[in-house]
Length: 98
Image (cartoon, rainbow, N blue to C red; front, side, top):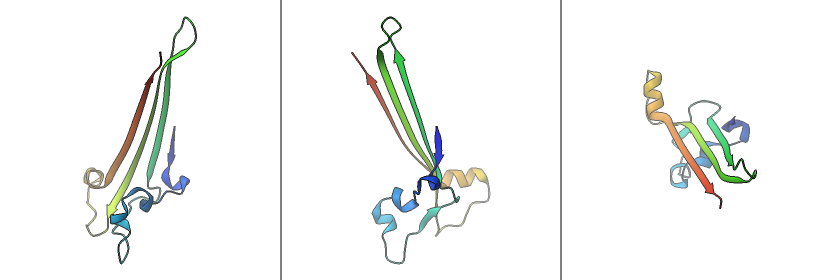
């Protein structure tokens, strides 16, 4: 499953540390694209076929966003833009049940 950050009302100020966004004169960072990025979520579970009990579960969540430092020029190629602007946060939780 996935959803755009702007659909959740998330702004760059919600993601970056306060020392980067709460500065006199305003932040030097913004989302490069209007949508900001995506929240991706995946849930998996493994069931013991003999008794139908879940024996393992995994939740994965990732936030991919394109954050631009407004003090720097925008790169010409898409590859360079991606290298200089993409930020990713991820979390994977695996639970083994006994």
